[in-house]
Length: 280
Image 1 (spheres, rainbow, N blue to C red):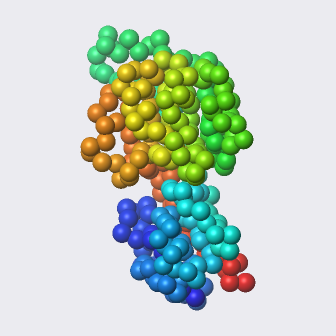
Image 2 (cartoon, one colour; image 1 turned 45 degrees about the vertical axis):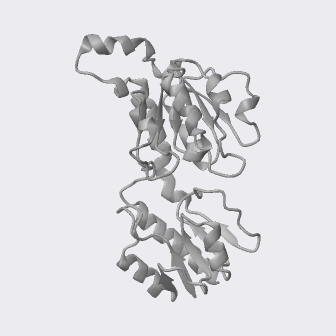
């Protein structure tokens, strides 16, 4: 049984070591390759494309190393698709980190107290903070739990109600946890941003392509909303030429929301358990 994986030549948190690959091969009696093989029966990774499906016609199982996939691939009904929800345990915590970072004005921190004082009117106690979570899957539910534990007022929007159906968005924070699909591509547009208050922030720990980046840049550049905390953008890894990096009201991180100290080993152990079940 041949398994193709694209979890190689990555950063430390995403690169399978030779020892990990050997552990899976020995324990499950399989062959793992990092070179596309037309005889591969299993795909393991997070960068699958239509090209992979066309050059590996014998695929029967796709195992995603995260909770979702960062493109709009439509998987054939004949292929079993699973994911690794445990590998994204840190994402919800990172979203809360973003909320607190913006709420306390750390994005505008200065050692000049008089200069910082202009931000004080935007700093609210937790029980006066209102949040809207867009996308209510596993991560969205955990974000909700954490924010409510802090005493914040939280509303949620699941996949059955589109944000454009809401007449206004009177929230301090809008937190996007949406996966990428044909339905969520450019989900957030100028129409959405236009319904937000001037004091509102947007936090994106979903997928970069769920937001129209030109519209997002314009609304931030014109200060129509107060700011953004973005772990994802279009065309990752983020390019130095990305206009968002030139704005003073945007925090951008390089898609590290799910980075935890034992994340990769968690992925391996989940895959081994799933592989044993698959072989049975």
